[in-house]
Image (cartoon, rainbow, N blue to C red; front, side):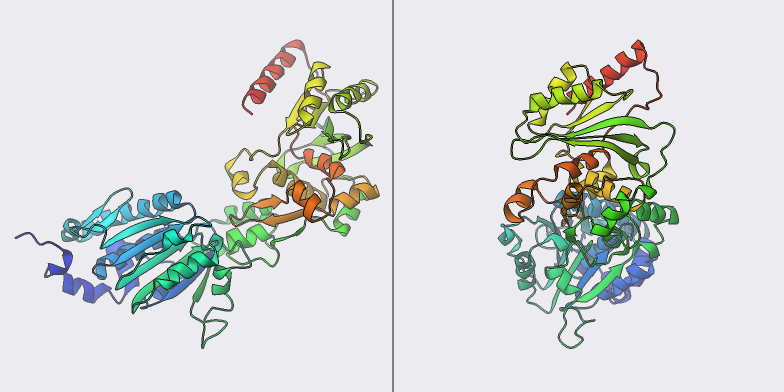
Amino acid sequence: MKLKSINQDPRYLDFCKRYRSDWVRASVELFGKWPSPQQYQLLTSVQKTACRVSVSSGHGTGKSDMSSIITMIYMFFYPESRIVLVANKIGQVKAAVFKYIKKNFKTVCKRFPWIAQYFVVTETEFYAVGYKGVWCVLTKGYRLGNEEGLAGEHGKHLLYIVDEASGLSDKAIDIMEGALTEDDNRMLMLSQPTRNTGRFYDSHHKLSKDMDPKDGIWSPLKFNSEFSQWVNLQYLKNAAFKFGGRESAQYMIKVRGEFPKVLEGFLISSSDFDRAANKANTPTLDDDWGWVALCDVGNGRDKSVMLIGKVCGWGLERKFIPVRIEEMEGNISPVDFGRRIKAHIASHDYPNITVAIDSDGVGSDTAQIAEELGLRVQRIRWGHSCFNDFDKENYVNQRAYANIMAHRAMTSGRMLVDGSPKTKDQAVKIPYIINDQGQYQIVKKETMREKMNIPSPDRWDTYCFSQLVQYVPANTRIDEDLLDERNDLEDLAASSL
């Protein structure tokens, strides 16, 4: 006779006796996974009845795999259990967790073939046969302003697994905690520590058992990528280099799993600027340096600025030396600014110069007239997202990337700046935040002007363009074929924007 559910199978009682109270043994014997020390902490913490566990984690710590194992253990050993997966980007979470669920379920079924008949696992579903919608895994997406969509869950055995919890509102977490009314209701929050406010932050501080052993309700865990067996030393070195050091905010968030002390403020200090303005700190350029004219186009209220300089290298090896900066009168039109750029370049010897023009707004007219006058123009569209995956993950857009990279170039001695008080006044008033996704974001100019009384940093913007501009070495001889090839590439790049 075919049994309807696993809890009717005579083998199930011994199965529960061996594993229900020992999740580490279950991980090893059911799934073939020896937990890392950090995963061991997670398993033993979530194993406790009515637990509230909060994990701040860097990359590569194995939390997605272990979340899938926790999901399966809870399903196997707690009849009619409900596991609710919650996240901002529920599609990504479903893909990640269910990928591991499918893989780990195959392992279980090889070791205990009789289990396969009692559960259904697909790309997006996991439930007990005959109990779909009751004894199952559910997925719910979070959206600010629609937190009530997380309500309605109750059960004797209920487990919430909340990913990207740092980005959830207090109201959302309140709603989920409000559902934990029975003796064996549990909650697991996992996230990079991207905010120093909110319930996830509090779960590691004033609401944690570590901070308040008597009244604290959350068991806080920290997963540091530096201690993960799946993260090699080269990754850590690269991360420290790209994030600006081990103590940088992004390294702390994305590697060390720690809440950084500062997640917002002004990007550049007065001392940073003064060191970069000291000509004794002028960087030595590589042999393949090139000329660039970096142009920020004003709109009548803001000034139009042209910065001419020498640039070499790429990314975190870029170097820049300013040669001349010109600030135009406020009423110059975008078209006249384009003609002024041409006239200035034509009256000086700047071989192979590339003209970078801010073209998100009125600068489009300046770029067009400059192109018609025969200049090699690169249109800066820094409102757009970055190009490679690493930069997309860490910077909201090219404006954020350019500002952060300019600051790092200053502090590492790769960029000289002019000593003008105007430039300094703008540079030291660049407000930034790190958002809920752990990305750098420069405060919008409208917000700077209207709420912070900070005018547009036109001069400083041109220095930031130095981190985006593509250049041609000054000593390169450009023949007709090379010129045609470059024009074709520039046309192709322009058509893709």
